[in-house]
Length: 93
Image (cartoon, rainbow, N blue to C red; front, top):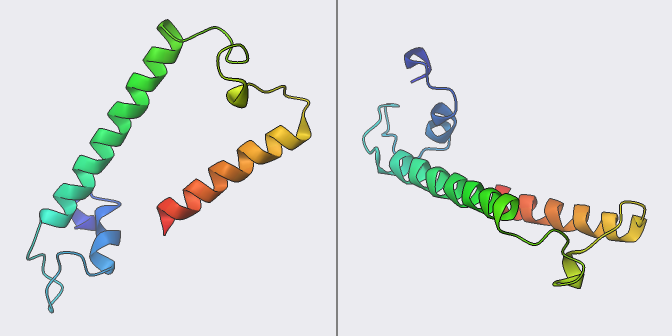
């Protein structure tokens, strides 16, 4: 697979997804599902960015105080960073 220019899909093969006993790819469905999930996730992220750039409120403090923050507030920045690291850890699991 690496000789064909693929970089990340061989890592799925090393985990045994869609690979038979001889190392031959016998099922491409796991690769298809991975691609579809990435495509949907990137579309949601892109549409969210467009929404917040064009239609979203200028500041979130008035509408949603939980999402408002000041860069100098160390506790809020630590909380935001911690939440993101936890979500990344769950996603990597």
